[in-house]
Length: 630
Image (tube, rainbow, N blue to C red; front, side, top):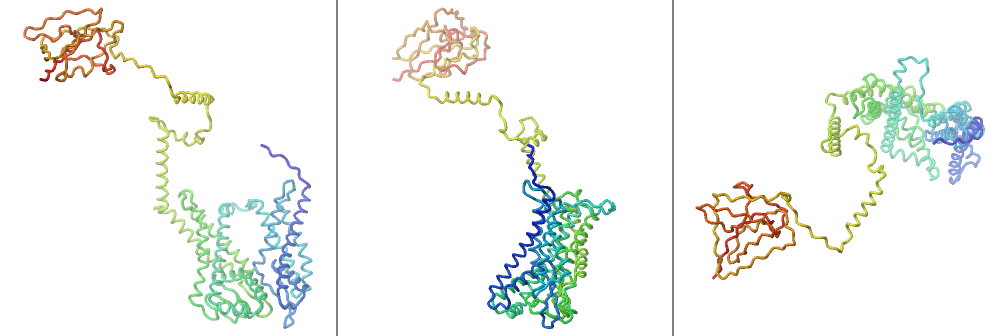
């Protein structure tokens, strides 16, 4: 369905003006939050040594310091202005996030609003931000902490533009544009998009691993020197408001301490004033340490111990992280051997990740340090041009061989236990699928795997047109079957059997079969007269005599006389019996002539037990009567 067109209010100029306003709003929000914090601290102080104007000047100076601007303190004991260039990295997070959010919202306007270009939005956001920062620089110059104009001119727009550009890149889907056309072909191949993504991800992960390891070192060292840290905190301020402000400043400087500790683990360490350096091997020189809780956790002066040498585990962990993330894409754990990268590509990706990690460490080292005054306090923190190359060397020397070893381990001939498990799971899945296909297919017909794979519809997705009439007819029949019937069903007529249409044929008695003599009736037994057969009942078809007629009569039972043949039936003459055989018991019993001598007549299983004998059926001889009991 086509989307309805929305009327756009204004044009590109309106979008740029909106971006400018968003940048100015972001600067005002950051300045307002810091001012509120400083004023709360000033109000809570029991003995403030200045008025609210000085508190607002301090708030403006802290806002500029959060952008990396160097501050200068004029009222020192020596009378020489002292610079203060250590920027709390946690302060930088607030203005950077506000500028990032302003640029991203500018490129994601509401419906009906114009959208600026990806390059125009961060530029106008930075312009609006700097327009608010310029008067703040002038205002802070009248306080105890004045901003260095040159430092403010460089750091304020640079930090804002970087944060706004990152926000515009995020709003555009984080694309990686094509390389310039003049780039050589071998560079294009080496910096393929997938490899660049892997390198960026591994570099960020390696830098985070270094920062995490440095934070662990800071915590361990603070706990180890817990008494000195507590004395420094209580000595700087005896009031709860001052101590709370000091704790908040310490927390804001924890990221700086993590970077210092990471540089300590890398080997170059960090400087503690002019001529003093702290490394895992030793703390050389004479450090100039002012009273501060974090500086109280610095290792003691002298050579290092094995406990200090253990800090080198931090870059080792970063190298492992880079190698692991690189091999995760170059040779996936459950991937196929053919899809794995070549050793050269894997080594190049790990090397690019190491280079990126070194660049990030160098930038963080430069941002975390700075001067705390003049003379011996002019240098504090790690040296960026030493920390960055050290991170590159550690991660490249350890990460590249480790990445190749992990790749070879995953692609070895044995394929690993997880690959064997994967093969077994695949085999079991194929067997289960084959069994399911056989059970679904018709008996005797193989199942079509292509049809089974493409058959994705539900069992009741559609119905034929005659479904509902047939359903109504079935319901009617079911109701009729369930309805109780008051009429008794008519009796079933006896089945005619298999020989219903065959004419009876008399069979003579074989000459060698001896005839059974008649046995005299028992004394005292009354003879029952023969009952005449009804004339109006049609004769049933041929049916053999019931099985109980052939059983001998029990003793004492009266002999039943033979029933006379129905009217109209022709009597067949009796054949003379052989001379040596006794006379048959009943001369009127007909026999079938076409039956073999030793084959009895077939019986019909459908004939009822009390069915009358057919007119021309052979009759069995009467059973001998049992003797009467005395």
